[in-house]
Image 1: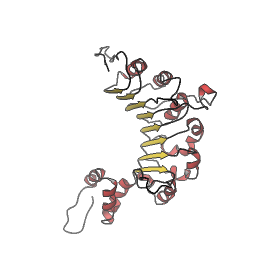
Image 2: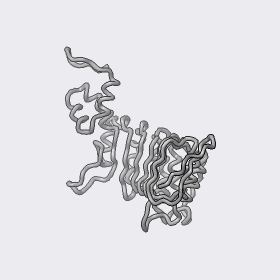
Image 3: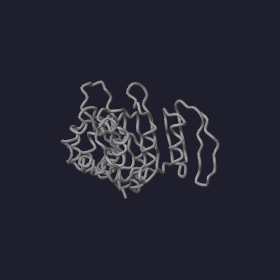
Image 4: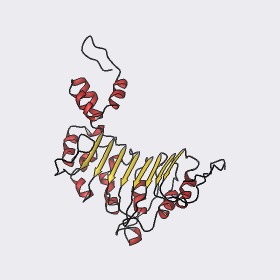
Length: 284
């Protein structure tokens, strides 16, 4: 229970949390400056989202959402015990991804309550051998993963995904081929177990000269063959044809509740339910 000065009403912590959950970053900062009580209550919300990147040399460039936007700020948060409040992290390190995190491993190990991770330009085959050290604190707590422009073979990307044991939601935006990939004699990692994957699958396949020449079909084949299968309730897919998607739709049919498809289409999709009921085809 939060109490205030004599004569003012008091509110349960749960109500305060619901109110703070609706506030943007600037409003949270203002609340944290009104007094010790609200400062203590606002602290978990102020530090729930972090964006870790290199310091921008352009002073006109807008800062990403989050109260700390450079890797240099991570030690300060760690020393003050604030990383226990972090629920969402976005990592934007286009070069030397692992090296950029190396000096902050002790602070990364305090992110035990992390639920959502977004990574830009992940060099998948190079980082996989190190992720057990860098990401070990939240391999079991992470529920949502987004990869933006990851490089590597689809098998390597799926291996990275499967290391998060309780992952429910997966988003991959424009996976790109990489010389150090499985089909180019790169390292191969065997997937022995896979997470629940029972939330939302959001895939946006890249187009243009950097697109994977193998196309999405091998990725879909390996995705539906994961040890624990697929139980996604929602599919959001862009840049595919119906021929590519039928395999994925069939795998998720027993649990599927919502589908959203955009892109270039031909033909139709059919959804077979667990009761062998055939839904109307989806023409796009």
